[in-house]
Image (tube, rainbow, N blue to C red):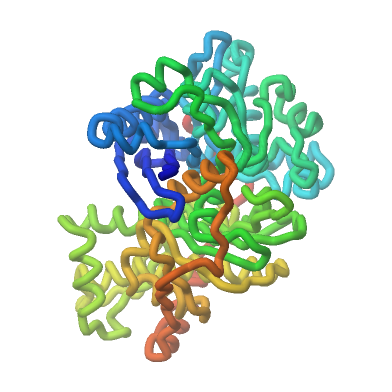
Length: 495
């Protein structure tokens, strides 16, 4: 029996799963990851923490499931996108890596927009805080000595690949999101790299997501009980790997992910650069396809935040109580989930969350429901932005940790007025996509959106529609654009 190992280096945890050729989960392991916020707008992780957590889950599988590990035919990688790991000549990280939700590079975004004519036409998206290119320009300005010592710049999963294989390699899908690539051509762009103060010599070799991108070091094969020369797939960023896990492999297929952030991803067989509304277009992990993205920076993290404020012990129980509670719509507040700024549709790292329309009758369950609805409204903003940009959206799958709540899924279905499909493997997410890419790297195929047994359909609720529309109208009034000069100066306040 052929087995495939998927390793997903997320923001809050690393997850590994072993699946068979039919995607049946055989074993899994999870290890947490810490996040540092040394200044407002900053969000960083130590690259060595990615490797330590990855090694921990592989050690656990080796100890608990040695027979399964010995049968793994290939390993696939997925990871949080946009992280910037500066690596020195010895293969060691030089500084903590700024993450996808780091908002310090507002001024650099504005500068890149001016320096490069039709930036989005080349890269697929306008420069936005959190993306790799403006963060690299920020580093070149504020930490030039670190850049001088740098011999390679790697994304999150690719630093783990370096530790596993000793090779600096990335895939074209994840790399296209750095905004350093000619996305349509699938090659690094000297023009974009130069605008960020670096040379393409610092960027890794590129392979396809389903191709072999290195082999496992012999000493690690022995440590983890894996076969010698185990092939490691090129892999993909978590958005693209999540699409593969959801079966989104044909033009028009889409998925919504409720993870730390919220992602709305639509596969397209045309390259449609995103020139506004905080959207972005990157290469898909499937050759000849592109992914149009909308992103909500705080999704499940907003639920975790309010649970912490309210002293909620079990989020699952909290969700169940919200679902069965007989809440008057007039008593449900209105929440905008801009706890860490917002990308789609506002492209504003300084956007702030709001909670309004509070009454004295509102309790924890009312506030919890408001947060669920606020995230649903933000997803609906993504839906509107994508359709206005001409995205042709067919079936929509719901995946990620938040997909455990069918109630939340139905709120989203109602907000966008579209049914959502709940795949049986929805909770496996990017780790499953990584395992499927491992299968492809060893000669197998990918599952598509029509290959979904026992599909559950979440239909819009006619009874909720009117109330949600009224509260979304209030929600839309919450956002006030941050002055551009504040965004540009934000980095200077906390350096």
